[in-house]
Length: 163
Ligand SMILES: [Fe+2]
Ligand SMILES: [Fe+2]
Image 1 (cartoon, helix red, strand yellow):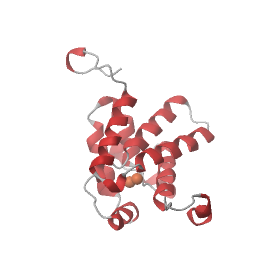
Image 2 (spheres, protein in one colour):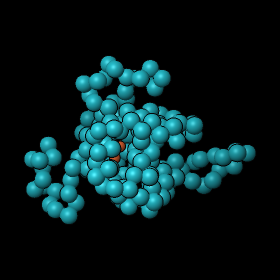
Image 3 (cartoon, helix red, strand yellow):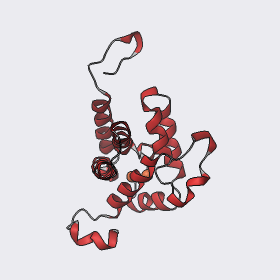
């Protein structure tokens, strides 16, 4: 249960609060419509297959549910795809900044910061943000899978090209 100033419980769990944020993001930016929900489900499945413990799995799903919160103002689909591949740093760092000041979101802010980090750059992390969490790599795979999927076509027919 979340508590706010004065210690009064809001009758709201962290997951319920994040689900509300995700809906707000989707409403504000139509290009992100359902992207967070689909990415969170894919990340959850990958995390389950990798036998992540309960805390890591929970952080992964929460981070996936909010990971592009720093990209609210991106309005063109081409720009969105480019943003993910060519210059992901601004929306990763802005998203991290937006989340880190709220203590329950601190861990997921680090996952969000690194969610476009390449696996081979593992040793090249940013000292200020510490080592790259495993959850960031899982989120990256789930995210790319969703971005590369044409949702008006059969998903299974696109399997080879996505892989
Ligand atoms: Fe992203
Ligand atoms: Fe994304």
